[in-house]
Length: 351
Image (cartoon, rainbow, N blue to C red; front, side, top):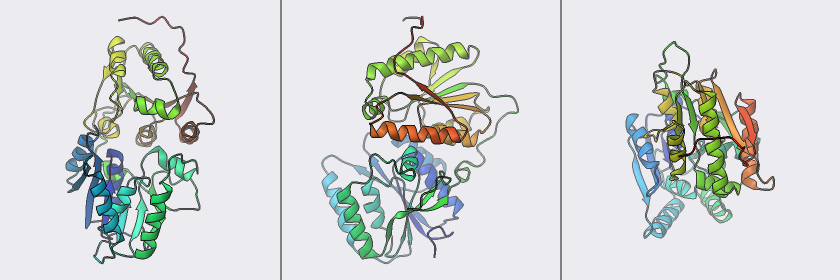
């Protein structure tokens, strides 16, 4: 049996809407009828409702494991000890949505048999960074060592197999098989014959983004204000719609949208599904190196997709990762705009 055979009983462990999207695509592409779906989610994560709704909309049964502050240690050791135990059942393959999330690995190992295959699914841009050997935040050394020991004891090959939408990136460290997301979204793309309309801006998790890239929060907000104003001027007859990141809790983007007559649309589904269920195709999509830009360009190859990357510290690992990702996007038909965080002297309306 090869890791990517069809019909193999499998276990999936995922934590986010995009990971669920990839899991559903893998289930249908590999025609897996016997599977278990486990969600390992952070209590209070705003994306949890999106994740669960997407599973329900696709009639996927699932089991939830939530992190609790008081019981995190208990949960941690329960699954670590369980992963060590040798077991035999008919689940012969494990899919995990985030290769850096060691709890996904430990949870999954509790439910698959010895000698099972382990396959990574995509988790957005971090997969590009991994395949480009530019990963900034890999699986921690201690957990990697522990899971390597467990895998050897149970005859599971770790850190090798990957099913990915980024299969055009060569890397001899991994056994790579293409993942076709159309299996998860087939039948949803039903658009009118008229031209595209509406300009969509895919937001980022602003505070986390600024922290990782070492940007000042106020500088980013001022620049976002400028960008939304410029889009309002460039597309005066089109609705300009800002879609915040599922984990973004900042209120500044909403205030900016109100200032310039743009719509702030918080979603109950992931952005790819939101745009697919519209009765029209978007005219243009802008974003800040969001993985959604890549998937949307694949779904709508003829539309304008623009990635905005701000100048950063070239020694910053996360900036290097974003730069590598942006260049990959550019080779796949996504326009790249590099800008300074210094705002231009535009005469913008005030509140």
